Amino acid sequence: MRSSNSYLALKKIALMMLAFMTWQFSGFYFIEEAYARCSSKPVQSVNWAGCRKRNLILSGLDLRNGNFRQADFASTDMRETKIDGANFVKAVLIRAVFDNASARKTVFEKAVGTRSSFRNSDLSGAVFRKSELLRVDFSGSILTGVDFSKSNAGRALFDGARMENNNFSFANIARADFRKAVMIGRTEFKGAYLFQTRFEGVDLTKSVGLQQWQINMTCGDQATLLPENLKKPTLWHCGIQ
Image (cartoon, rainbow, N blue to C red; front, side, top):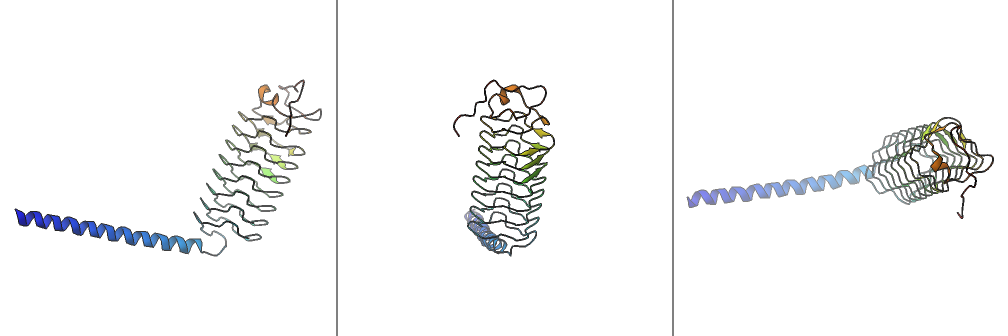
């Protein structure tokens, strides 16, 4: 009996050592693989998922269809970069600059992009669903078929943007600035929070989902145009910005 118990104990120890060695080897392999992936050259379809790429100059590159899921691009310069079809899901884009970029059908879902800039960029078909877009600058950009639903875009700038068939349903766009934005087609505002959102001079006649309580919180003027079922407030409550 004692011999049998000793055999079982030795067998258990051997299995534990084997498991530890396997785990250790796997860990080293994972680190090495991650290092190799994050060191890949910036080309089309590059896989930088989870990589740290902050404070870099990546302007003018062709990174179409790249995988940047959960990558960190904080304060990185990506001006004039092609990122069409790229995956930025849950990426960190704080203060990153994407001015004059091509980002058609790019997915930024659940990304953190506070104070980032997309000025004069083509964002047709892009997805910003559930993203943090506080104070993001979309001035002069092409925003056609963009999904901003459930995003936090408070104080975002849409000044002069070309907007068509976009979805802001249940988004927070309080104090966002849409002045001089050109709203060509249907824009969904169902459940959106529009506290002091600036619509001076904006044509909202093709917008859907808007209710009177939302309009009553916004900033507008005599040039603001509303859907037929809504009326302008007696007093626009713009307050101090």
